[in-house]
Length: 356
Length: 183
Image (tube, rainbow over all chains, first blue to last red; front, side, top):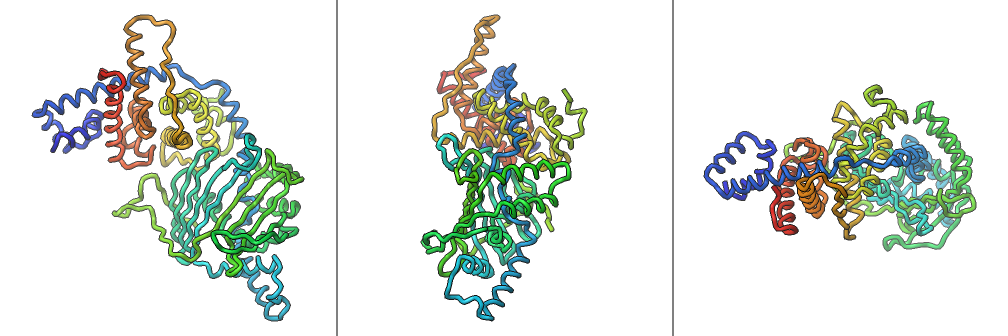
């Protein structure tokens, strides 16, 4: 063994973190090598000195007593606006498939009877076509960015999180990564059939639900679209070079609140329910929610979705939030592999669970 | 104050704020000191302490005591927050906390030692965050290499070489700054 190889093992040797074979190699080598004995002495003195230095430096330092009150304030106000209501407008996943199928049946029937001529493209018709177009999507990627109001710039420039998804619809696989930028967290999931691999700060179920909330099929469900009280036509726009219809709808607050109360009743424990419902009422009756859709003019595939929450007058302020989801790479081959090493063992940090 | 040992672990996990405060009181110094040693700044360490416990509260239901120690989980979140903070700084120059010697020293010997320790800490602060993290976990917390691997999410071999590299870099940095080897 060369001296350089021995040097690489010396700190582990001193920390008693080498295996018996390595220990013997090192000790045999040290017997005959003055240079490595000197290196060992230097590393030993550095680590001992460092131990003392770290202990002295940390001795007696304590956080100020205000820290707990800041934490309490933050946990009592739950999360930042968007953390609290992220995904709140989306519906439970089980409705997604059912709604899409029902819509397809109704649209098909209307077309056959000629009630729905193709020549007049209202926003409602385009959004219905967008639902149909999803059946041809075999794979896609998304980037989902959420923003809060930034008091320093007085606009919606404070990015709260960024999530990226790769979905292989036909192969039943997904890859989801989310990074919290304002509070600093990260989680990642890879789903292959019913196996869900996870790392970072999140539970399996919450992340699966979170990921599904920004999928095109969740954004475009009929129930979701039914909550829009009016849909305005905005000038067409290009997204990634694709000409898109551009619409903006305003969410009906009462319908929304009723839907959310019904939804959360199933999810929350009774003790937390009333507190949350009080929050839903208080927050949403004083807010205005709009959603924008960008739908490809040629293929009717959704390219972008944006949700903006302001106060009732449309002003952006402390309680404002915004989420923009961009959809791209439709039907390109996407390879998603389980986080396993060559021997089939899980990579460090990852855990795996089976979901129904 | 309610002590953590008087409360079952799932009380704070199920949202009991009193139990959570007890948890904070019990572990605040551990988290704060680690953050302080890794970042080199009291101010940042207080920010990180706050972020860690807000994060613990928000992900409280994901912690499974059967799968790992609470302290390992706290270490992991602390390290992640320190790395996150570092990423945010990117290319902005980080000023090192200056030598903060007490005004009164009981003996010259203590002063000499303290100065040397401060120099060594300054040298450590000039290493990158990944190296500082493993040094603090090993030589302040006395974690095993396996525990460090779990905390930083790196293979055992990487931890082994990173600690070795960090110690050698530290010595090199110390020699460059002060022209002498500690010890």
